[in-house]
Image 1 (cartoon, rainbow, N blue to C red):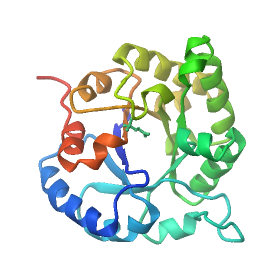
Image 2: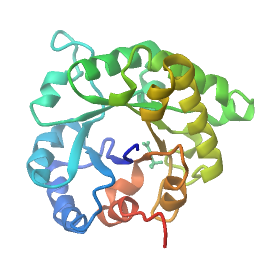
Image 3: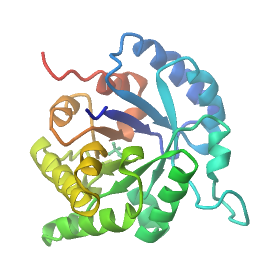
Image 4: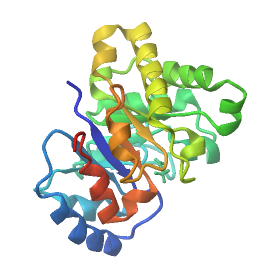
Length: 251
Ligand code: PGA
């Protein structure tokens, strides 16, 4: 069975002081959470150390929002896996559509980052997804197949999360329907099956991301090939994020 993983991507939000206020509200809300799901927060780099202290002894695990393929070196503005591991970080988001768009990240670079993460014991969260134009031109399937094939090359599917994030759904309030999100996530699993076999496809966790809110989370989580959510805007509000995390499949 795949354990769903609900991850909050704080993007370029939250100072250390704001993170402290957030956790004071957020952590008590997780007290009776069932252990059948993983909870992850990806703070900006400057807040990782503070948040690491605050979430000690809680169920919350940490992710970075990026990771470099080298352990150290002349790579201004980058962050290495060892720097993250020092703070107990377990996951690393790579290939988010924002760095893909603003910094022209390629699938090859994303694959380097993800491989480096795995080599150092971090679990990469590899983001894929089509733009509105690509979807309207009927290219979504082809674009996502390429991103998955190139981005996941040689990765171990058991230590990997893929996040399907249609770009048109990110920060727009236009959440994908559960049926559409399920169809794409099933397609992603099929690409993994074609490339790496049944065991790999059955173990890779696939999240949906893009305008997930407490009201839309349960129906998304109910889909057989959706194993969690990557949440941006709604993860900035501790009460809203806790409600997403506490989704119930029945009742
Ligand atoms: P959103 O962002 O939930 O604000 O749409 C999701 C993401 O970018 O990961």
